[in-house]
Length: 319
Image 1: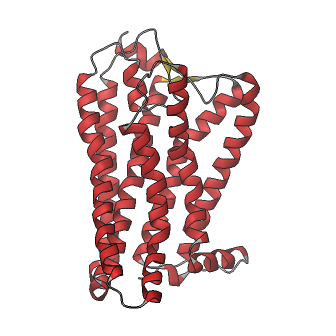
Image 2: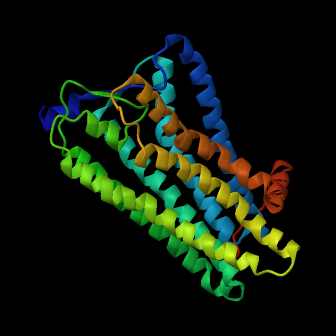
Image 3: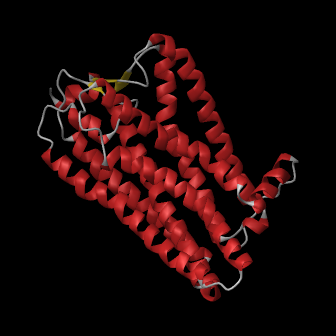
């Protein structure tokens, strides 16, 4: 198919969340509820951090950035899935698919980089407490977040451009509920070797390098905590990392399952269901649970949320 015809009239069909008509109404209500809770929960986290001076620290600055990224990440895929379920249509335009792919990669990779940055912040706070204020200044934190956004946009642009080079023929059903790299490469009728190599090396690096940085950070953190003489001091140090470690385990566990350990028999219906379930976990469930994990395990965050609900807000940022 010619590139000009693709950009003007070509459409993909999304496999969706289920092929059973009787499940569509329930799926729509469940995913609508999850999306609304995700957006409201993460907005409350951002508002709580912005309005409470006691939360104006690097750790919460990164958490606010993570919440913003989660809102955008979920909004890239779930609204389109809801529209398709409600209208009983699986169509997405060629341009819409590439746009969704670009933003999905940008905000998904942003989650990965921010989690690695937050691990570095905890490493500095626990292993170098006397130099923490100097190392994690507001200027440096802003530069770290800016660097994360720049890298994620660059990676997303590379992958999206390589998909744009491909041609797609008659088989245009994407075996997922959103446009992702591997499903698009599977239905391409042109050579995808370059795409596969870039996905293997660049995509693998985007996942594994931050994961290894987090792992190394926590090895040093645990070693430093075990040297603390008092049991109360060790508990306090561990508590500052518990929420982040829970989010890291949930997010990276599902991402590694989806991208580094995909189903072997990709053509079968069961494997599509398994891959879709893994995608739902990291695109919908993890952003949904993040506000609960951080707020329920953190007294300062719970206090800030209570003050917001009582209407006691005053927006300012002071480092």
